[in-house]
Structures are given as structure tokens and as C-alpha cells.
Image (cartoon, rainbow, N blue to C red):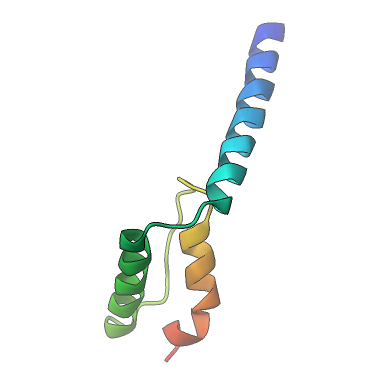
Amino acid sequence: MMIDQILKENLIVSYDAEAQRRSQEEDPEWKVAERENFLGWMIEENSSSVLDLGAGPGKDSFFLKRMESSLWL
């Protein structure tokens, strides 16, 4: 039981460190373009909901949240 707790704590520390590192990296141009294309598609389709599964540091969700006014046109 003690090993499981240590493993869990180490995993949390490792994940948090990696998420912090990734959040400070500049996104590659292709990712910025994809994000903007997705926003354009959402506006065209009159869509305003996104499910973020938490597979990264949250940059895409943060971008869409900042663009919220564009989504409610």
C-alpha cells in the first residue's frame, strides 16, 4: 500500500512538471493554424461547446475561452 502511495505522488509530481514545461513552450505554427481553423469551423457551424479531455496543458481550451465572444455571434 505504501509503494502505491509513493508511486502516485511521484506520478503527480512528474505530470505537473511536464504540464508546466509544455505550457511554457511556444506552439508550432501548424498547431496555431489548426486551432484557428477549428475556431472558424465552430463559428460557421454555430457551435459553442467543446469537451476538453485534459490531454495537455490546456492551451487549446484557454484559446477558445479567450475567443468566447467570437463563439457567441
